[in-house]
Every structure is written in structure tokens, then in C-alpha cells.
Image (tube, rainbow, N blue to C red):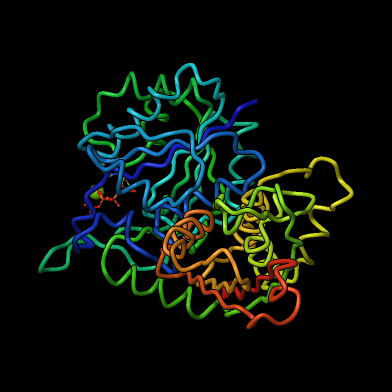
Length: 379
Ligand code: CTP
Ligand code: MG
């Protein structure tokens, strides 16, 4: 069974204001869109993620997602329901039997909500998260009108989950004008929609105050942690030299079970250290043939996934490479760029330094290259 996540991110974010549409705005180290994508990426039952974006926004969206792997982008329409339709059309033939339709403007998506929706979908054609209304409701403008009985009223959130064929049919049959969510279309087509408990964290970012509150709640609820990594690999003639994810021309390369990228290994250990997850050897044992010659970017991706699964974000990584040669200076900016890409963070959150040991010790005698890294994460 294939369960697709469809994230709509084709709005203009007019009510938030600012230069960037809100889905691309930074919230605690990653874009709103990236927050939503991560929630689906780490969920074991979600098999694909499609993101609907505004026309000509592919570069913006790619930057906002760093290197996150999604199934693709689709261009949306002038109203939310048209953006959803564009996404659904693109999913036809993908094999998706269920779909979760989510606003990129709701960055904090707890795993439990997805679980509740998928469970409810076993019985119903659709399911959505909702919260009770707590304020008094009334008609009115400048002058107060009649009160509205709030009993039985719900505040509807996303993601909304549907059997794929049901929501596709609902969109095709819809003739009710601008629909602000998909569940009302499903109901109009005669499908059943279950209600599961929503979550206050799922509030939509609409106005500037919502973004300030989201930032404040992130800052309040998270602590800063650091991890330290250190590694050494032996230099040998005739080996490839991989350093910080780049292949460098050098008479000597590093020996090891994987590609022996000592710099990335130090970074992986720093990341694992920050979440108390052991070290690189415990995740990728050198005794395992599977990792023979493996590119170390796989190890970085694994450490990043572990951090994302815990709701963490990488604030900064500082790497020091210790060697007499090759000279790191000419490669420094390419290394920072590569590191930023692998870690899916801004280049300003990475640092690559180098030093020699003045001819002393194992690096001074050019027997090996050492690297150390410190990672700062917020979790
Ligand atoms: N959305 C969309 N296509 C549209 C309009 C909205 O994909 N034509 C998406 C938005 O990107 C957002 C979600 O639908 O993730 C909810 O919409 P809303 O909060 O209204 O976002 P915006 O339309 O971007 O904001 P505003 O109405 O303030 O311009
Ligand atoms: Mg809108």
C-alpha cells in the first residue's frame, strides 16, 4: 500500500507580509516547508512526498528544502483547492491508495496526528484533525450581533487524509466555488469523514504574530546541545583522497573501510554525540561488508535523520582538518558548500578550518590525516 503526502505550498502568504512567501520563511533553522516535509520523511508509513509550489518557485523551494529527498514539485493554482487538484492530478498513476493533504503553513506536525488519521482511514473515506472552539462566538462587525452556539463546532486543521479515489472523485465533482479545505468536498460527494483529535501545535501560521509565537515556542521548548567528533585515517600511496565530501587530487589518499573521509567521519561523530547516539562505528561497523568503500555522505544522512526524528535541527558545525598536505585553503569554500548541502543547512552555519602540527606527530610525519568537529544542535 502506498500512502502519499501532498503538501500545498503555492500560496502568496499575503497576510504574513514580508519578501518571501511564508512557506519559505525560516523558523528555528529551517523553512516552514522543510518542517512539514521532515514530519512526513521520518514517518515510516509515508511512501512519497509531493510539494505543490507557485509558478516559477522551484529554485526557492529547492533552497528551502536543502537536500531533502521528495518525489517532486508540481505547480499550483490561484486558490488552495486548485493547488490540491494539481497535486492530485500528478499523483494519478503513482500507485498511491491514500493521500494526506497538508498545508505547508502548519510546520509543527506531530507524528501522533498522522498515526490517528491513518487509523481512522481504515474505517472512513476521509479523516481530519480538529480542535474544539473555546472562545465565545458571535455574528457582528463594528457592532455585536447574535451569539453563535459553539457546542459541536470544530476548528479544522490539516493534514486531511483520504482514500485516493474518494478525494479524486470529490475534486472532480466539486461545483461549490472556492473550498477552503478538502474534507468539505469529500462530504459534498457523499463520502464519510472521521474526526480525530487535532493538536494545538498544528496551528496555521497566518499573521506575523503566529510566526513570532512559533519562534518563541521553539526557543522555549528546545535546548542547545553540542557533540564532539574526532577521527584519524592513515595516508597511503595510490588511494583516493576524500575529504569533506570532495575527491581531491593528491599523491596519497586515506585508507579505511569506507571512503575513509576522515573529515565527514568527525562530523558524523559530532552529530551523534549531540544526541547521545553512540559513534560512527556502532552504526556502521567496519566488520560489515555493506560499508566497504561506502561514501561517507551516507553516514551523514543517517545522523541527520536521527536528529530530525527527534525533532532537532542543526545549528552549526565547525570542522578542523589537521594535515600537512594537501593545503585545505583552496578547497575551503567548496568544502563548506558541500557540508552545508549534506547537512541541509545554510552555508553560514558551517565552518571548515585547517591546521598543521608543525611537522610533529602522526600528521606532521604525513602518516595520516586527523579531523575534529563540533556540532551544535537545537532539540
Ligand atoms: N495554498 C496553495 N495554493 C494557493 C493558496 C494557498 O497551495 N493558491 C497553500 C498555502 O501555501 C498554505 C495553505 O495553502 O500552505 C493554506 O493557505 P493560507 O494559509 O491561506 O496561505 P497563503 O494563501 O499563502 O496565505 P495568504 O492567504 O495570507 O496569502
Ligand atoms: Mg490564502
